[in-house]
View: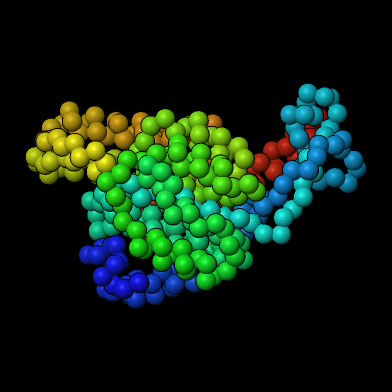
Length: 315
């Protein structure tokens, strides 16, 4: 790979080698800052497979109690799992046309690539199997999960050789393709702006079989229209154009309300699918955001553990 093939010209300061060194330092800072250990402890549970449901016995971990079955049958039941020796991680990265947009110094695609690369390197550091799936209207290159830092850097190279194309997004098709390809339980990071339709059902079905993290990448201008007078809007995927007046207060209100409604809809979809929703804007620091995500997931995991324990003491 040479610098002329680097897909982020004018965005990353310096040369390709400089960017790669920066990414390497970013991954090192993440590991030394505790993100690596937190990543391993919080996601290790995705690498287990269900074996049986049986009655509770003295000495069983109370966290393994299956509360729905217990309530239905009137007798405590626990889920028994077989722990797998390694975790499989797949990073599904949206390379459709809308990902090329960026009103700041960094585009959504650039932000998504850096996020995906950091996650791949963290997983490799934890000796997990890492795979990569790129998609737009269909699943494009797919690298099956394999272990090793060399594999992670290979995936970084594949991402760097890609550019968002004038192709529509099909999250539904990507989810269906991943469901067919991934036989064992996998931790899947879907990194996208989620500007698509009719994908909720397929995303929820994928989340039923796998541990799904939806990482939404967005630009500040998508939430609040910049005051720039008249400007031409062009749909990156359909080519449709529209002139707008950014000083029009009514347009600005509609723009902000639409952005807020979309964020709420996506959050509701994630809750319904029992999937985590992470979000990052093109203006945010990726490492700081990753550490925030991991802390929030840790708090959610702790709440899931302590609430059933407190309930059992009452009864």
